[in-house]
Image 1 (cartoon, helix red, strand yellow):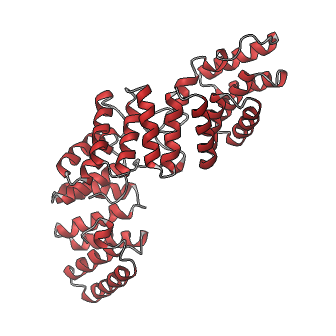
Image 2 (cartoon, one colour; image 1 turned 180 degrees about the vertical axis):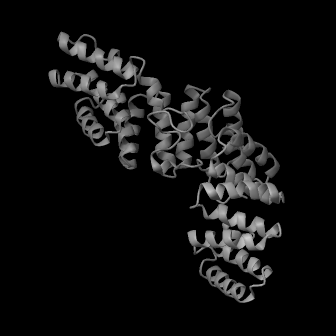
Image 3 (cartoon, helix red, strand yellow; image 1 turned 30 degrees about the horizontal axis):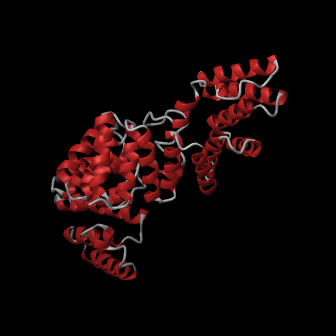
Length: 374
């Protein structure tokens, strides 16, 4: 059975480089939702056209919008900055500058201009939204949540506001509240596959696994190529002990991302659980080679090698697992067995003792409590 909550392989929400929260196309090819809501002229032409702006301001605004449409955010920022210098109280210029800095990753400037703009236009939902995203990218999750909640109060009809607030809530391990936001988002746009994936994750993290499975299936029906759709569906199956179904889904995900160490690890883990040792060893070895920091893949590899009658090879993998995570009792247990089978009884005795010490010191995370049967 998997040992952790449903996680994005290779990345985490906490990294701010998450698959579901990139300003540009990431490893999964998913764009930040604001891009789809902004680059179609929302920025300029939703503002009050009754303002009597100079021709120079209008030229700069149109130049900035054209640059945004072309993903040329440096040129967009320059145009909107010039417009803002000419007309500091122009909403479109301020909106454009916040967005451009956000897209460029110039987060301190995005936050500063966003704060100034929100103070000037406190009732503008879009500015609150983008300020919230700037806070989020700058690791200020509490401020991000506050800004996005204000944006939601101002305009609850926008899918992307609910979605992005859910991302922040997931980051803060508020999965119940994130699920509620995603449910609201999907009421507005029920065909959004990626929102179904995230809703499934929120359900999975709150022990609503059967509901999670239905969300992952819905996502894949809406878009068979949904990034990580098969991965999360597989994880949910594995958490219920439905390893054969999990293996089939992990294999589908692996066909999309053949060098993803987390997908390889989880597939190898399920194969190990079902006794398919040779296949498990292939995937676990590759996972361990690709990610030398994953103690679990090294542990499973060592255990699989031991069960396959290769205790000497298992010793090396288990020692690596211990080096990565020395306080985990389980690798010491398997290492003691591997050393015994290799005829190294004195070393085995030391590992048995170390296992007993760690198990006693940390009973709440050792052995079965950690999702392992040693």
